[in-house]
Amino acid sequence: MKKTKNIVAIFAMSALAAICGFAQTPEKPANPNYDAALAAKAGGDDSGMRSYVFCILKTGPKDASITDKKQRDEIFAGHMANIGRLAGEGKLALAGPFGKNDRQYRGIFILAVTTVEEAQKLVDTDPVIKSGMMIAELTPWYGSAATMLVNENHKKIAEKGQ
Image 1: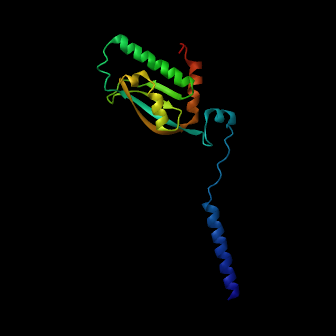
Image 2: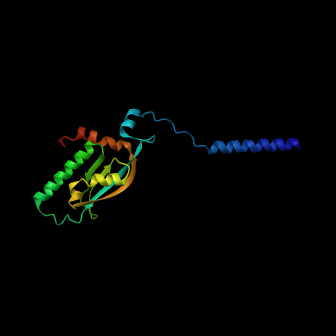
Image 3: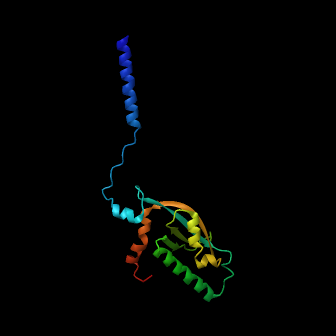
């Protein structure tokens, strides 16, 4: 009887050890292309990701009422200058316009901040927002930290100056 109990106990412990071993998540292998300095520069976590705020710029309530070409040109010149300023400060990772669409979408910003409140303060500095020509819809976004490297690389591929 004692021998049977020992065999059952050994079997139970072996089964438990096997189950525990299978339940463990294997460690992911190291990435042979990993560049620690580049990851730090981009602000990435150990998955190469980081938090941003995604902004969709949409046609605003005053867009149709601003019909003077000179005024519109000045507002858009200020908009482009603001984009340059935010990118230069490292607060704007990516920006660009949308093509024609039926959703009133005008463009996007990916802002290198972690809260919608921070992002709102940044977009509120833009002349197209101040004028009411556009409105900004903001939402947290978790994406590749490599997005932070777009601006410096864009300068290397844009034949015309920015």
